[in-house]
Image 1 (cartoon, rainbow, N blue to C red):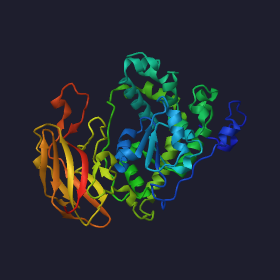
Image 2: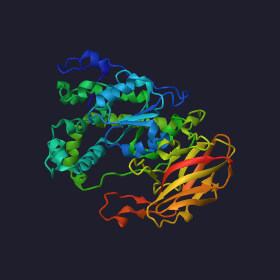
Image 3: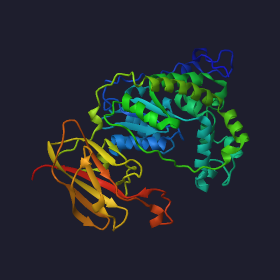
Image 4: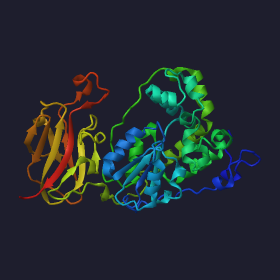
Length: 434
């Protein structure tokens, strides 16, 4: 397939992109010298590109209170998103959602844009498996039969499916609204406009992006590019089950036929990514952005939802008011700037069961053991309080080592939760002399 220059706008093609769309502007990347709080991260989340795992990384990095999530399909999205863009972004560190580039409507320069790409063939099969788990009502709304097969899925003309199964990545990143609007005649003519590939590649040249097939490398890249003061080693979540649908060559052939632009785009994007990864060692280190660390007030209890600079936690559960520690990293960590040279740390804990062995929890400060006592206990909830410990200027690290994880389904066989859980954190306070 020949990829034409975007400036030609499909010369000689009756389906050429209108001038006003082809000339739509692209954002410029903010300097690494500018702190992240001045340019919030905007995660352009392409469906089924390991975004669930990366959203968890962002929640831990910035805290749930500082992260705004949007859903393009939710009622009221347009008004809420327009309101966000119309006002200062004070107190917001990150915005995320399945939102195409054009929706930023000239405000892209206010953000540090980021996206993750995935092999288009793997992405489509993952989407197929994911949508198989949808309710019968949702499937009917999308025009799918309850037990649909792959052929029905890949040939569906329903707007909720077609835009993702037919070059969904370049549609989101090219910045041209006609190709994401089902009511526009160009929506179903993407294959006739390879300039979408060039526009999406131009965006990648100006922003940071990752590759789903290399999430450890993606973490290393953003750690350096965003000046994160600690090593990112978050776990990866797999939210869809595997089956043998990808073993049928006819299904693979169908995916290729519907995603020629995305396949071309992905291969060229990988070359950009490889160059960036090779240059990491030569890229001069910028000063760490200490704004990404928790800055507690002495004596104030801080809900875990407000704490940034975390690692090793599952997402915040609003109804329960807690965040479970993940079964993966060696320890959950909270990176913080100490409010005093010597502090006690009080931690609200919730266990997976009323008889959970809280006394076997291990706490660490700077990697060294931090003695504590169980100050209060009420069934599955308790409060731990450490001895006074010396802190250091700059970044400090509180580590929490979980002694035992239990499968949720061992406690409740009917639970849809597949996780292994041990303890969750509800709040943390840093205390001085009393």
